[in-house]
Length: 115
Length: 108
Image (tube, rainbow over all chains, first blue to last red):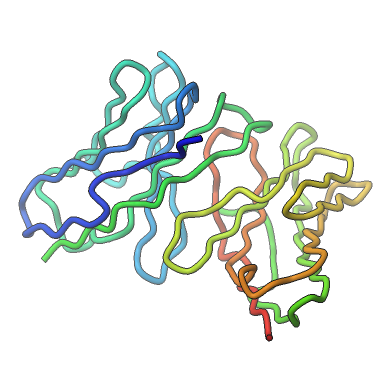
């Protein structure tokens, strides 16, 4: 079946511009996660959605970052006034439910380059 | 911070078994142990997870110590395609907390 998809696959933007990154989770998955991986760094959690509950935003690095999930499916991660340190691969994952028992399935990522 | 400890790197030969260790000495009773791997230029891929009993799937086996303070991911017959960074994660809260993982090199 279809996995997690993300678009665009690559995005180059100028410093100070806003960007939107999209994630389509696996159909039927109620939990959705955003992570990012900077060059040479590990993966870090950004934000998590579970159903209609308030999202866990504890990993967002600054108030320039926001995310929404419409209709319990597609999610958009928005970065305002991009900075060079925002350059990274942004990864989306989904799982059937939230909780320790459920595995997460990752998309291919969006590579963001801020020039 | 990641709560698990893994060797930075390991090396094995093609078609031989590989045992990847992980220590999670502070794991709580309800946290599952998850393993993911990341192939070059790809997103992480789920491998296997378990709570107390040993687990097997088409990709690997997971052996969990009786005290749950350590586990071992077993690739029964490594191929070149298994070369990746392998992450062992205690999943308690919803989010995965990735450490540095073990970089596995497979020699032909």
